[in-house]
Length: 262
Image (cartoon, rainbow, N blue to C red):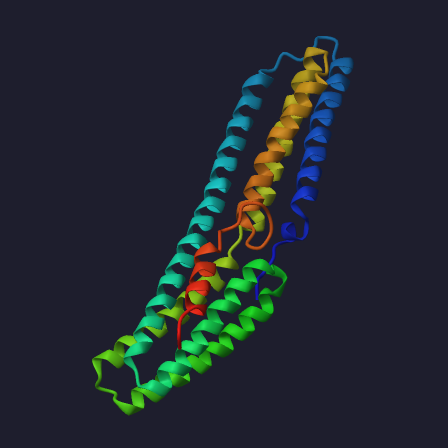
């Protein structure tokens, strides 16, 4: 079963909108704070605020790059595991031809159902829990066939090759499920948003010291930051968003096996 963090319950469009509002609110808060302090101070504020804000913005850039790197790395891992699983299933299907006729027919039938099930899940992500449950049931059925093959001739190298390939199919399934449960930790999201709000307050504070509020620049800054945050969240999500691992290799294998004669 896929796990979710608190941020996953927000649709990407809602996350984008909330981030824009938070950034604008932080900039406005910083601006008002500077105005209030300027009014209360007869001598003005001469502290090197620009250097401090520059340092915080640099830290924000580091956190954004760090978080993006985590999300991008896991995206690449999910894509690599998909290709490995497709190759493992194809190999297992071919090696099923090395086993006795009854087990060969049953194994290939189960593998065709297995691939078709996973290809259809790509078109209907909401059915993923049912697909995972049925996939695990198919693993048991496939392993039962492997046991029958092993009992008939436990010393056959060809049968051993088939059992090894089936074991890889099951292993890659487990790896894909486990990796899909990995998300950017909540503490990193909280740190990212915390530093972001401080940075944006600093920008607003600078506007307040200058005595002018630039609405256009504030809005552009909010949009730019929110786009990056939404992109990171999109990469981090498995079944939602525009940046999804293409399931085309699994679909191609499904078409190929469906055309095969048992």
